[in-house]
Image (cartoon, rainbow, N blue to C red; front, side, top):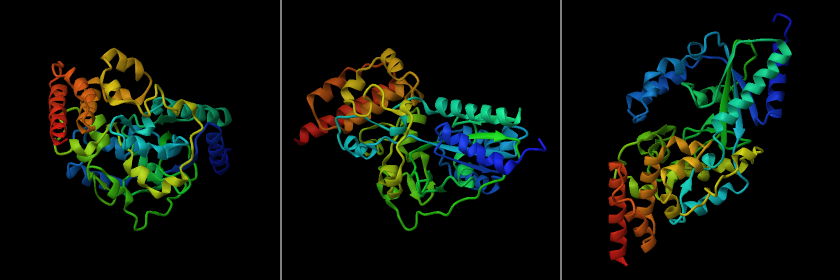
Length: 356
């Protein structure tokens, strides 16, 4: 590969990536020593909750060359998912009859689409220079995606811990190509959060415990997706109608006025899940759940957690006979987790009925 002009190849890669639907591309090395120290402190504080894989695969996360031998560069990309009316999400959050699902999860599972496009990018590079060593990732392996994206200049770390871009806000997915190509690297950009604390102020459960520090055990995204147990009764009322993920910190962020609307039709909402009544979602049996969420990120929660989350939302909903009747259909559910949260929700509804 001695004849290859790597500066030109880097420019070509960024152009090909844009043609494949990636909004921005950056290139960085594999040194994550500073970020590794931050992750070590995060784990030591226990902020990762039950996500044991963060600890078990620490060495692989912090050493890309160990995860994929031969790696000396990481090509980091971002793909937008924002819809034109994404600010209308507040209307769903504030309507207790509807179930709120994080906007990233309303369409096709992003893992598949981003990896597919990364493979096309790798194929295009191969076509140009011949075979090379690479591996594509998208939130599916022990990769410090946000750290690599920030090192590659795709954005800075916001106070909510998400990656922020001046030209694209935070409504985007990240993906990576680990490679042995000695490409020139890009450089990090300045942090533009300034004195703003809107994301911290907006967090319903106080999960952003300090600027740039997130306690997953209080985060609604973690609680509704990753966590499979009984949710702390003190946190349940704070979750509102959020049944899969939470976007409040992003919706509140001023930089998202620059969010770029996605060009990918696969990210458009499916089955009207961008604002469906909770009682309708709670009525789904498992077969319906599996059918309706096929090919979607929502599958990650699992049916039991799906019912648990909706039960909490129904408990938080405005009192109505319809809500109570829906909850009563699950009082004898086989899952003790579901039964527990249904009982809590019915008790909450009874309090509201008594107060009227």
